[in-house]
Length: 211
Ligand SMILES: [Zn+2]
Image 1 (cartoon, rainbow, N blue to C red):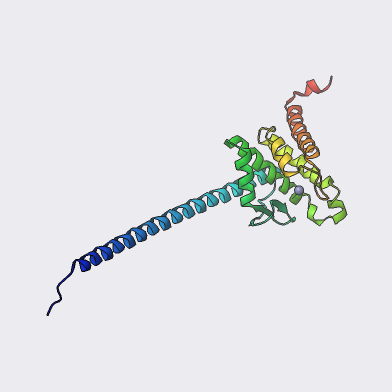
Image 2: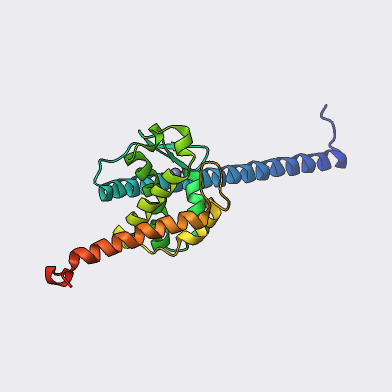
């Protein structure tokens, strides 16, 4: 014989139904959360892909400015940017952060990116990684790379002024391997100025040089 349903059973079904709805709502919220996480990951991957493509393109055009074939580029997870004479290494997270914090528009982004990459290409061109450590630690090679990075900025017609803040951050104090920002800024400025003067000199008609 069927048991007569009591009002207590009815409340039980209501409770079970409520729990089921809550579970569905939770599952739906979790699915939404996972969709958002996936969308954020895809966006971040796209940003990183764009950033990698930007570094490749900038490195290649800077190599062309130096008159050399493109230097192999390797992305690394640590440090900032470096050259071992065979490859240029770039920590994309560091580079992206540097550009984001110092630049609000593309002219600045291009100038800073070109300066960083030209500095490493200058090390590469001069085979600085092959010289003894005591020479490498004398700051002279760093300043020479900064000089050529300054020349590269002038070659591209970039704005020099953006370097001040970048170098203050990269090299606030001298270290065993790197000079402080004021020396690096001066070396870059010398390279920039020399390039501009050389171009102006070349543009002069011959008779103007005999005075
Ligand atoms: Zn260097």
